[in-house]
Length: 312
Image (cartoon, rainbow, N blue to C red; front, side, top):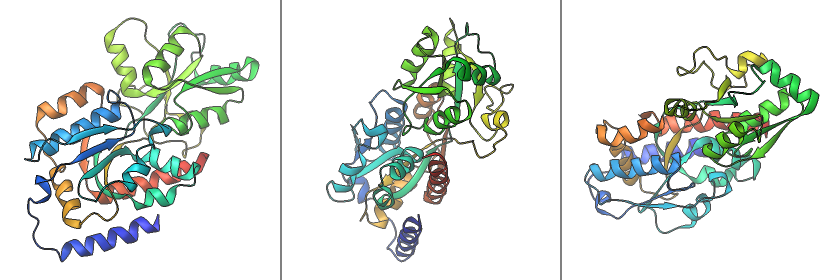
C-alpha cells in the first residue's frame, strides 16, 4: 500500500499550494457508482452520499449500480471512465482489498484516491435457527465433525468472507453455500436448508424487531462484543485467536487524476454535520454514520489488507 501513501502525500502537498477552494466542482454533474443493487445497504449508503452532496448545493448526483464480482464490478469502469471531476465511487474497503488480493488487482485498488469514510464498522454474526439443536459454538464444532454442516453466506470475496473462512477452518466439516444477501441467508437458516449462516449484527437485530421466528446468535466477529448482543461472545474469544476479528465499513473514492480541489470539495461536503432526515433512513438499516477524512480511509484499507491476507 506504499503507492497509496506516496500518492496521498503528493496530493496533500499539492493541495497546500493550491488556490483557495471554490465552488466550481459543485456545479458539475456528478455520478455516484457502487457495486451492489440499488436496494442493498451499499446502494442505500450511495444514496445517502448523493443526498448529502445535493444538500450542500450541488446538482442532484445520479446513481449508477454495477452489481457483480462481489462488489468489485464497478472498479474497472470507474478507473477507465470519463475525465476526473465527474465521478465518485462508494465501496466498502474490505471488499476492495479482498478482491485486490484474490484477483491480483491490488494495483487497480491503489489507483483509487481515498476521499472520506462515511460509516462506522459493521460487525457480523454467526447465526443458527431458533429451533436448531445447535446452541453453542461447541455444538457447531461437534456436529460439523460428526456429520458436516452447511454455512450460508455471500461468498469468500464478500464482506462476510473472513467469517466464512474462519468458521470453516475452526470447525472441520463446515462447507459454504452461496446465498447472496441477508434475506436469502436468513431464509436458508430459518428453513433449515443450512445449519448456520453469517449476516450483519444489525440485520439480526432488525429481524428480531419484526417479531416471529428469530435466529440464535452464536458468535460475533468484531474485536469487542456487539452492543446489540453483549452476552454473545466474539469468535476470537471462542477460538482463542485474537486475530480472528474484523468489521467492514463504507468509504468514498475519487478516480485517478482527480484535481486536489475536487477531492477536497467532496471531502468537505461529506464532513458533516448531516440533517436528521438524511441520516434516519440509514439508522433504520443499522448503518451508523461516522464521517472521517482520507487518512482514516487509508488506515482502514491497510487494516483490511491485513485481514484479507490472513485468509486468502
